[in-house]
Length: 281
Image 1: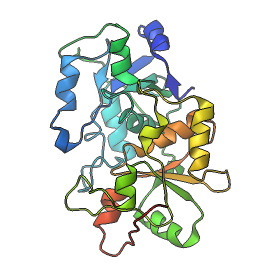
Image 2: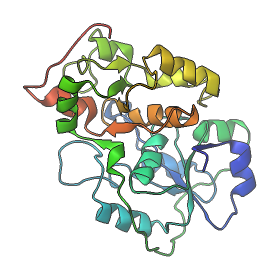
Image 3: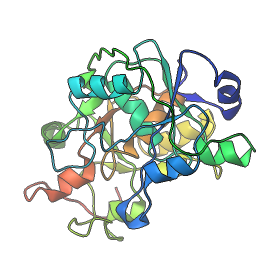
């Protein structure tokens, strides 16, 4: 199953009975926008809203961390999604948070999952149809997850990697946040990065229209960031959202599956005893 689909492909397959289309939009608090409200203003026909803050672990103070398999199964089943469905994610920015939904489904063993290249902005810019308002109720489905723990990293894994350096960590945040020259959007956290990690802002993988770069250009970006095939890859960011854009880009570029450090900088920076680095990698 291809990790991305084009707007042309989606337009031709909107009525496929096994397609499930999900809007996984999310906004930073400073943007003062509600993704669910924006969904009601305009969404692709047949789409449902996928709340990344709900399909998450409710028992941690960290934002939108991966839920238990049981919670994931119940919530996606409530969306009418079964194991046989082809799930396609998009978001309202182009490509920002849709990758989070794609990664979550892969984490729980779903193979038929893709991301709409360019998301809602490209879809609307092409004059394609949209709908407003709430969506019709769906029939609850039985979903059976199969956790792929190799795609997930926690704080303990990242601390161990400081010593072993067995895995290459790619950081999707802006270079200013990475090198410490720009403040973190969460005022309580310092900027900087995990020692030994490499900076690759997720936006550098995108064209102006929010689509992913061509395969050769993607590979060049990853090679410049230190990806040479010698080490497994872990993607990190602020809170586990844009890290999944890097993971998606690696898949599209044919460079393999990367794990995601779910707590990312929000967790790492909040720990008093974790080392923080600044400056260029």
